[in-house]
Image 1: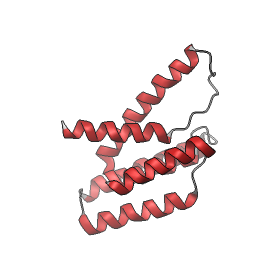
Image 2: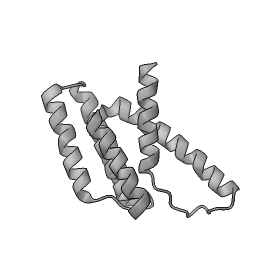
Image 3: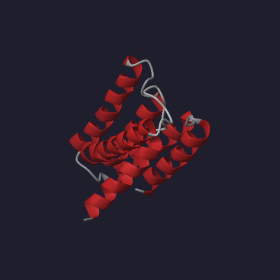
Image 4: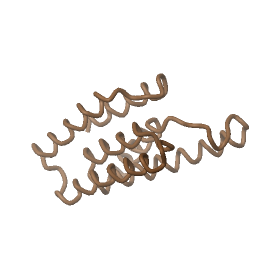
Length: 138
């Protein structure tokens, strides 16, 4: 899963520094994930499809919410789903959301932001992926 880790690290740096991720990242790494699946078939087809559907759902949420969830974040979830499949991507996403919520509470408690303060999500997705992999190793 080095390509996914590389994608999340590059995405984290870009998300923090520029508040955006170059579209070419999503295209290149999404295609790499699909190619890896076709070559190695590391998960069942239904699990792979569930990972893709997970990303599509978040793309729809981004559109419906008028980008309150950034499209880049939704596309990062899609790429993660392509690499991991539905089960692992869901676990990584849940960890990312919990970590993000924790940091949001701290930011609110310290009066460093309010409900409308936007946080880059890909760093949390990276942390969620790492925690998911650590949990799978235990």
